[in-house]
Length: 70
Image (cartoon, rainbow, N blue to C red; front, side):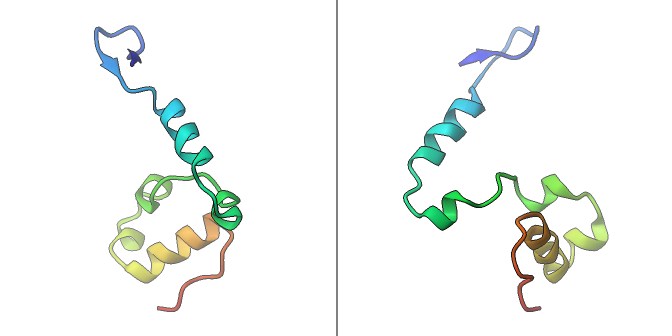
């Protein structure tokens, strides 16, 4: 737990949690993937987020993967 900036709230230290999770990944290909959140953290376009093929294409571009078939 850590303070939330200068506010009177305690929050989970997400960075430490993420590091612990990353260390537990055994597959080197999965470990090598770019660190990013879900597609709605990368993009806020309704035209993309409401069309699964477009959302997959954005995710693939961020992760530098081949786009998934529609």
